[in-house]
Image (cartoon, rainbow, N blue to C red; front, side, top):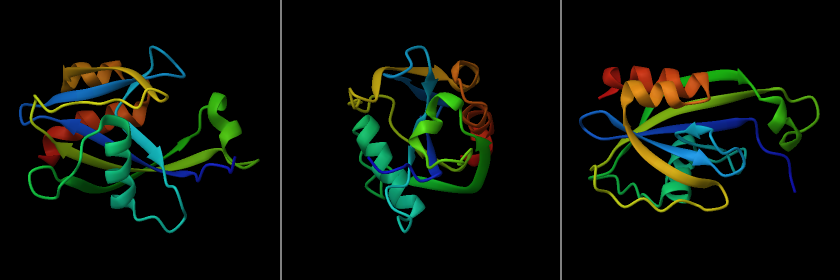
Length: 148
C-alpha cells in the first residue's frame, strides 16, 4: 500500500443553528471527529478532496447549490499522532490540514463508511468541540460562527 500524502482536508458539517455532525472512528472507538482525509494524489484539488471525503465518509453529496463546501482558506500544520505515522513515508511527522465547512439540513441522511466510522451524532457546536480528540478539529468547530 502506498504511503499517505501528508496533506489533508477537514470538513466541519453543521446546520444553520450550529449543530455539528461528529463521526466515531472505527479504528479508535471513542475518537470523535469531523470528516477528514488525505489527498489521493499530489495534484488533487483541495476542494475536490473535501467534496470526495464528505461523500465517502457520510454519503452527503455537495451539489454546489443547496449543499456547498466552503473553503476557509485556512491550513493547520500538526504533528501526526505516533499511532498513525506508519501510514506515511519514513521521517514524515507533520501533516498540513486544510479546513472546510458545509451547511446541511438537520434531517439529511447520513451513511457512514463502515470500515472508517461506526457511529455519528449531532451536537451543539461547543459540545462538539469538547468531544473532538483532535485539537485542530476542535478549534475549527469553535471558529464556525465566524464562517457562516
